[in-house]
Image 1 (cartoon, helix red, strand yellow):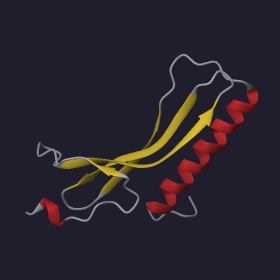
Image 2 (image 1 turned 90 degrees about the vertical axis):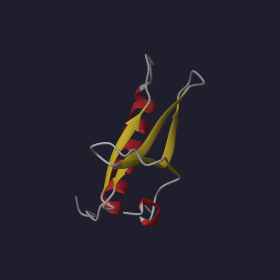
Image 3 (image 1 turned 60 degrees about the horizontal axis):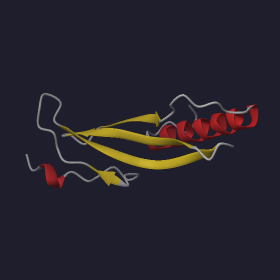
Image 4 (image 1 turned 45 degrees about the vertical axis):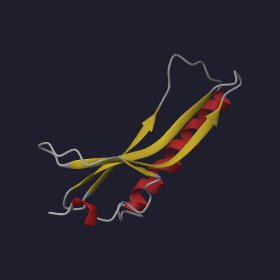
Length: 98
């Protein structure tokens, strides 16, 4: 099968190379959002995933948080951004009412 003939996921901002192991998939990055904190640190929240050889896509939400202290307002903003990312995933996966 010609892997290059498989269209990239429509939300992909980066698509990695095919990994032709047991899973035969390629990683991709989608939308990325940032939550700013008061200590000049941002918490990235991104939709990422993998695409299989048959075109199926699996998405997940990636959050990069180390040992960071945030305020209540920042926690609410992080929650809002996480829900926004989850809603985007549902819409892309054809589950707008999930």
